[in-house]
Image (tube, one colour):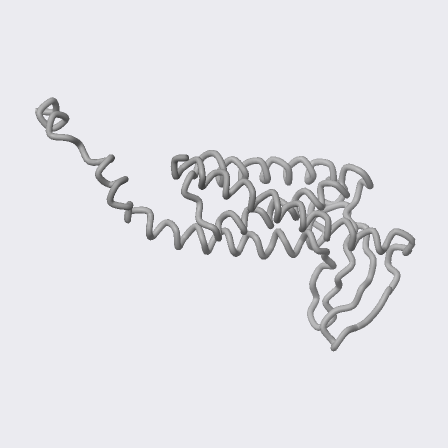
Length: 183
């Protein structure tokens, strides 16, 4: 099996496992609030950091694009598709950090898209109490942390892009016959 194929397989498996786990965790956590009325305080505050308070969100963070839930769901799936294509198809040497970051972003996007298409809103329930900040959920944690991990890994991987393994470097160098043809 060639290295490119095995890396794509590895990336696909890691992506599938993380997305599956994170979406399941997200949907399970949201299901815990199915019988709660929006705005209700469920528990907390915990150590003065956060409380569990149900919000039905039809927009993005901070009330942006309120009512555009279907459009935001489509946008999330397009971003997820682009990340999957990058990590598995386009970038055959995507780093482990890029794969993990992309998987978390995709999982969060899919988790919230499920809500958007099935409920016409996103179930948010984690409310910080020590700062003014939007209520969020497990999917949002995946998107935020995943984006940070992906960007850091992307930048770090970009610095090593020029350091090809010896066998790949030899494949990319022009042969003597190529040099003569160029003259």
